[in-house]
Length: 111
Image (cartoon, rainbow, N blue to C red; front, top):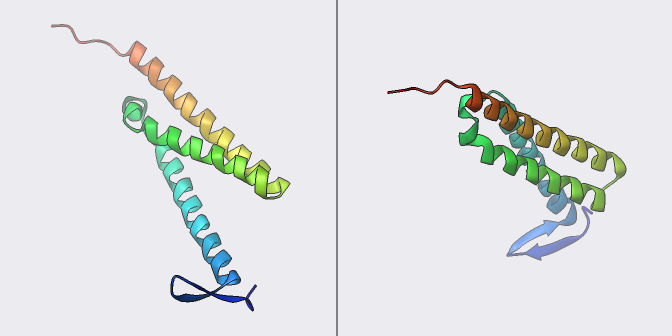
């Protein structure tokens, strides 16, 4: 892969550089995703409605990642991606459920 050179948009590239760069880019985004999930876990029930769309978007994106992993990679990648997707879905669902319980038991102010 390092020996095959080609021109791409005016730059001289190799297949190795193309795939290595793509792998680094995906790794950075997955690290960012893990940090976002970690911070979302710290959000309290009272603030969850403000960030729930971010949590569900993250969960759906990892579900898509699991589908791609099963289709194009090996079994280990598919299992890991599926586990991450399931855990994010369950976490977002449980936070939403806790928010509903918080909202239902929250005392209402009377005038």
